Image (cartoon, rainbow, N blue to C red; front, top):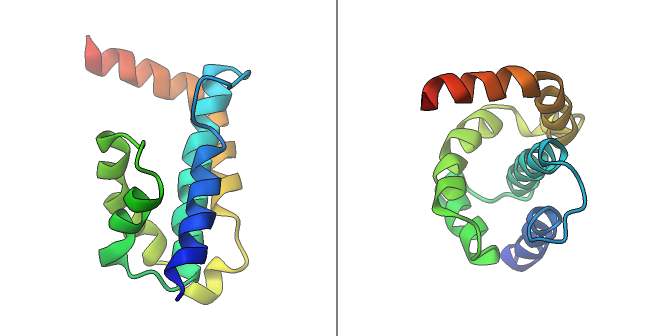
Length: 117
């Protein structure tokens, strides 16, 4: 069954940045978490997980994920699943996401401040 190897891969990708053992900056940790989440969705897509089941598969293999992270999965899935599978094989969405996050970190934080004030 395809679900078990996917669950293992999803867990490994998301656990890499969870927990208090992170000895990196908040910026690095947040951007790495986003990258891992995109990579997880990309791997699931390439492994044939249907978009309808994606959130359930991620939740089952990562029960400690917050509801706010799980709530973001459908929007991420819409983007990733709109890309042809053959095109996903040649791109690293995680690396691209992390680079973009790091590059735009200050702007993102400024927007967050504006929204919360």
